[in-house]
Length: 423
Image (cartoon, rainbow, N blue to C red):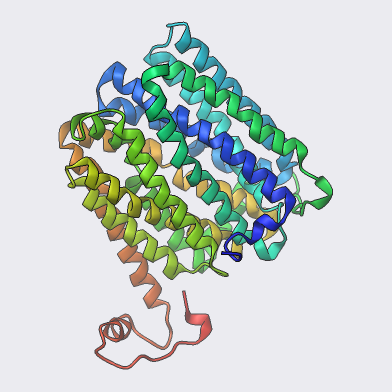
């Protein structure tokens, strides 16, 4: 356990992650409340898919450029500006709801604003995490950051589920606005003399192309990046499906928050398991992807809410482990002055794919079935992970894929590969 939380021996890391945890509890309260409000107003899965698309569409178009900007500027100051912008968005949303003037158009517009600000916040805030600890602890800090983000999902959706009835969505939006005091305060109180600032990238040139070129020309990153993008597009649309499943299958809209909570318990476990590893490998990423795909298929056809609550745990574990693994692998590989761009490109792949996967998931939910709107993502995930494992086995110079598979099945004695051949 000491190895799992080794980044927290640094004061700045403790302060930052504590503020981030409190703020993200509020973020997930708002996220859950917005989904419930849109479902009340429309009663259609497609509307939730559009909401998801608007939130993450700016990441698709602006994310890579925002990462280049984060590499060229003070990431701490940039994060303070973007977090302040997110607080203002929450305040406006709360005022509109509490005054009774909220409607679907306002929700869509403010969600788009949220997406634009988040596109710049993501690479700045996540890139700043690498400046809290020395080089040898960056992979652990990245995993702790994911654990903090996913851990907040344990409390945020549960809080929304408990309070949305007695308080209403407007006061939940107010609670999120107040929570930004925690992250802004922690950024202000950090000791700058104890930071490990990365060298800033030079201005000008082709920073986005340089980041893309680095990924495409790095053999250990390109295929995992493609798989990561495809799984993110089709395998992570639970938040589009769950609000409708809660009402239509599980019997109450509040089950949306509780299923998210149990899923977040699994996400926290997945993040911490990844953090406990000295070095994250492609094998670990693949194993978590398999858990994600299988759990998604099982939950889709579970039917009963008590079974969905149980299956949400491995779903969250596999999902968080998969995402955290890829983020850690990229940060182990890339040079310090390119971290913001690489983090931004992974965010584009993960969050920027929602505008594609979200509406597709919504259409399947409305015109095929709610079960298959979740199950198709599990099928796509398993297919992608199988393809990546097949590619990784083909990289072994002293063994063929079939030799390795026969070895795994016990049909022949293993031929030990050299250390450089391990994916």
